Image (tube, rainbow, N blue to C red; front, side, top):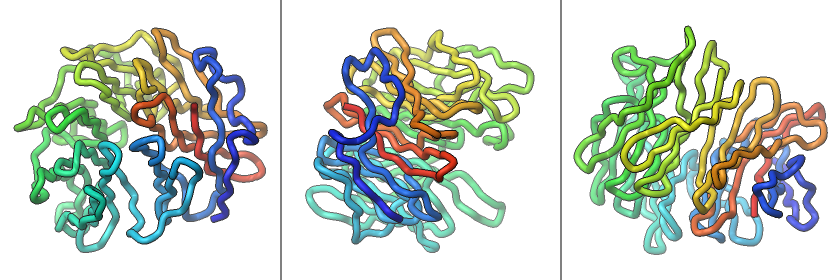
Length: 350
């Protein structure tokens, strides 16, 4: 894959019309690559101003060192990375006989594999060097089954969960949240398709109560991402879908006691990603069936939208969204299509 860097001072703006709420800040292209069979940009994450990464299919990570993006070498190609903060990270890679897990802590790497074959981790959340959750699938005699593992300092243990887990968010070792959202084309346990939000109590996973949401005939609630910046504040986002297409966006907010649905119901929109903006607001990744994806800001009670529409773009799909802890800087990964071809982009907001 050909990769080239675009210097921020000279880089062309990707977005058309930065939102007023940005107050002079804007999204810019930080890195771009030609699309190929391997190397598609996936999730992006950050542990600090000088530590960020992009997962690439079939290739090593791409890492930000505070100055530019560089290809990483040495370790197995991870498809999933979770970091609770600077100096600590957990990486997951496939192996036919086990799940390869590498942990970086105290300045060195350790191999902590999950000793099961024919398995794959689909979501993970780490709160420190001695606490990590991993949800995934395992192929057995009866087909694919959902599995949940927990590392609590000495070994991986299998933990029972009331529903399949599709995503995590963690505040601390005792404040871990999980989404379960089978969607229209998948069945949950006992054939249930309902979306759920669960919380780890320190002893067991418990399902929390969601607000009543009226669904149209043939409609489902799908929750795609969750962010929990504080114990008493969190968000889960998704859409009401009918026939696989979004009918209207859904944003749920946790106030420390219960989940409530915000009165923000953009039609024909699904929120696929959510991340804190480093303050009291949010950035969200939005997908639209008939136009390119957008980045949406929620700040001081107001909503604003940033189109991802460089000249000639026919489709833009947000693949990852992350805040740089302790700052208002953001990273996003986008796949943009145009008649001339497909580009993989890393965007930065600062």
